[in-house]
Length: 415
Image 1 (cartoon, rainbow, N blue to C red):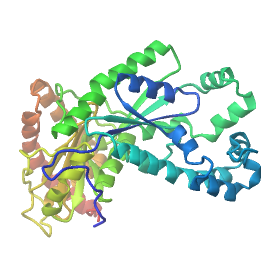
Image 2 (tube, rainbow, N blue to C red):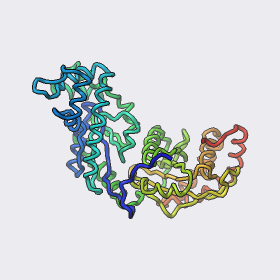
Image 3 (cartoon, rainbow, N blue to C red):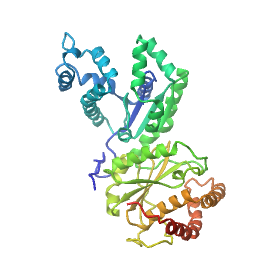
Image 4 (cartoon, helix red, strand yellow):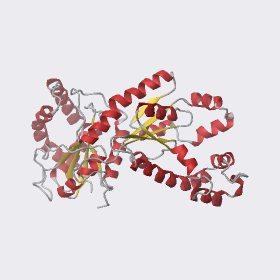
């Protein structure tokens, strides 16, 4: 197994590191405005733009590396970096931009990590990041807030700053689009309209999500959940699941994370709860990972350590219906994280039912009718435990049908 990320926890299991939040958005979208509003509410700021300037100041290793890569034309008469000359080079040449990022990004990340390490555990550290382009970087934060605005709005803002129109358009075109940026974000704020609306949205984010998330994570408790409600399928569920799965995998040294449950089945109404299973070689490994998962925002739910056994084809570990369950400390998105052994029947059961329901429309509709009836019956149960228990008889009678489908289609358990 890959080395597990060092969890920021003490021997007693308490968290020592702050809640890490990224704020990202295209130029002119209002990313810095959102970061400033969060600082006004109590966050600590790490400004990547500022760090990017500091790591290439005269006399730094970053400055020396930039001068070697791009030559004397990007160095001013006073020995400082000629940022305008460098910008003209890199925004016109994607290869040059990649070379510059290869120099500055590791230095900025190291400086940001030093500032994060210095923050107390109760802090909320906001990283103002203009360039966040891949899920691996997004997964290194507890939460990513995206800020968007229409391109024309962004262009007008840049012109008001005194930027030439050609340069403004080139800067916007050089960055990823909001369509590509949104799947990297847990939260999306639209800043195309009234500044007062943005300020209200940021305050609500702080009070209803970031503050409670930080408190829950420090206390090692799952976030409270509201009434049991089935919602229509959300087209954002697959992208959100990819981001959350990457975050869980990163926290556990690269272990496999599988999206299961109703939100993994296209077109199926479901509770807005993303279910995953983390695949481990044994339960001892699951127990060793508990602190790393708590640090990532998924505390252990100790009362639930076993699945209901169901009939099925015996596997290498036929008696293994034990598991560990973690859940979300983030009140903004419910997550059930089932930690199951690779060759155990409960892992196989979850994947078989997912794939069978994806393939069999009649079974899917039958299951949906059951869910709707039970959701109405147990709508006020805050734990949803009775709702889950009431589904078990249907799973037991459906298991032979799922097994028959598996035999007919030659379905096999993913490795």
